[in-house]
Length: 139
Image 1 (spheres, rainbow, N blue to C red):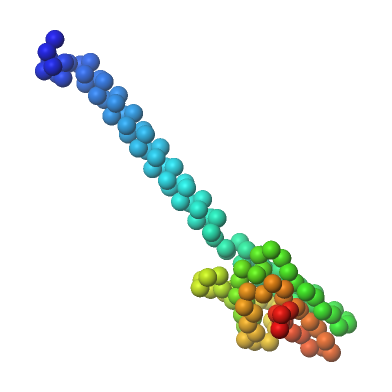
Image 2 (image 1 turned 45 degrees about the vertical axis):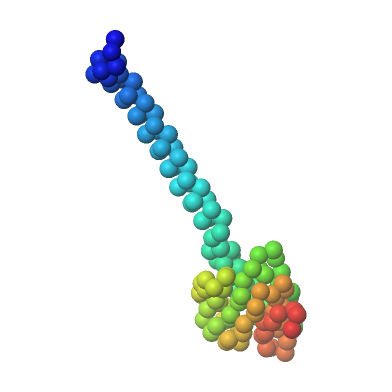
């Protein structure tokens, strides 16, 4: 059997088609794997969940402290709170993570407008003589 005859045979066409199909399947598996790895890496670095969690937690905490009938000081700390730079506005709380600023409604509206805390380990919420304040424990 000559080489020319084999290339033109049905068996050679079938072998080539199977090889191409297997190669296409392998390429598709690699592409899907790379897409999933990229998506997982993006989710791992996404801080939106933490930002929403902290903004809601701080709003609830502030409401509780402001409604207290007596003076109170509360030190707020958790594993993720020091990852952000906080700016308390009149109506919102800005959380900055590596230059990416996300603004969230700050329903409590209790802190002085413009209070800024840079990556605090502990945030101190205080109500004293009817006045509410937020500050970094280190200051």
